[in-house]
Amino acid sequence: MKAVYIHIPFCSSICNYCDFSKMYYDKKMVNKYLETLEKEIITTYKKEKIKTIYIGGGTPSSLDLDELKKLFKILDIFDKSEIEEYTIECNIDNTNLEKLLLFKEKGINRISFGVQSFNDETLKILGRKHNEKMIKDTISLTKKVGINNINIDLIYGIKNQTLDDLKKDVEKFLKLDVPHISLYSLIIEPHTKLYINNFQSIDEDINANMYNYINKTLKENNYNHYEISNYAKEGYKSKHNLVYWNNMQYYGFGLGASSYVGNVRYDNTRSLTSYLKGNYILNKNVLTERETMENEMILGLRLTSGVNKKGFYKKYNKQVEDVFDIKELLSKKLLIDKNDHYFIPEDKLFISNSILIEFLE
Ligand SMILES: C[S@@+](CC[C@H](N)C(=O)[O-])C[C@H]1O[C@@H](n2cnc3c(N)ncnc32)[C@H](O)[C@@H]1O
Ligand code: SF4
Image (cartoon, rainbow, N blue to C red; front, side):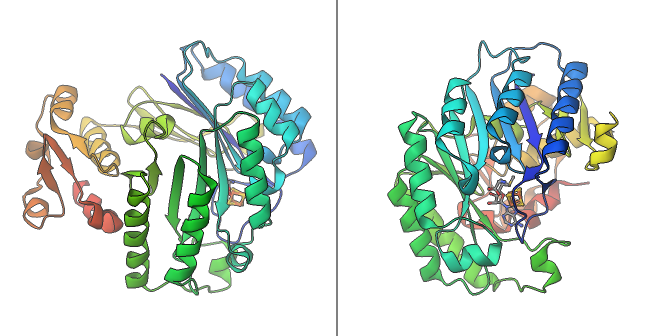
């Protein structure tokens, strides 16, 4: 086991599109939550050396300085002697110098900021509380404390947004000079404010144009498109997220977190009441070999490099084409067989869900 995900479900405000496991920040709850998180880790962690830790949310940066210190004290339990990547997710509106200095002191070497857009109008639609100046100031402060491995999340494909608006967002991102970006097309999830208010989806063709524009522009600016929604400068791919896409094992601790340990996938409960009572796990799914191979394809084909055929054979003692009927996908050029890899061509990654479904029995 080399990777650990820690979920902090608290947020200072709730965004209009968000379906993650999250709730309003509440000081009393944070205290109880951290105590429970510590217990959960102690009962499961087997003292392995950890290569990547990802503190995600929710909004980990919504915790105050003392709560963050308490969190890092809990995370001292992990053997970090060989740690390579230690990420924390932050929001622009609750990250400040004191917190950044604490992150640096505690060994955090990568920060992922939820920026979503630089456009005030778009930010308002999404329900975000920051503005363009705050983004610039926070990124520059982060670099000043010596954390340069920075990711920015942006959302595009929002009804009313034009290709021109997107171009401006991408231009402003490029000016920040950070080495990684995740770009997500807006999904209107049930139970969110956007859904309840009947907010409409963008036209499919406009959305596809936006995706192609993003791919082209980021490539021209030396960002390697390495996963459907992720782009990185040389040496800055997310090591932690690659663990997921390479179908490797990981621990997940906290509300709603998932784990993959042995041949079992676990989903933690999303009910805070159950979690605080110590009933951490909601689902436990013992995988068959077939399911493991399906995951290998479905996750691996999210990467532009795709699935390594020899690697697959080494793991399962079977050829990909003997397990999955991929003739039609190959003949339609929805799947490419090249340099000992199967991969989805970049211009088809946008419709990858309809391709990946073919790998499910
Ligand atoms: C784990 S989430 C939240 C991280 C952090 N709390 C924040 O909001 O900045 C990671 C990213 O997923 C994206 N995301 C979340 N919900 C989405 C949705 N409904 N459609 C598209 N992207 C979404 C956002 O870009 C978000 O920053
Ligand atoms: S998008 Fe991030 S900040 Fe907004 S509600 Fe979801 S987890 Fe919280």
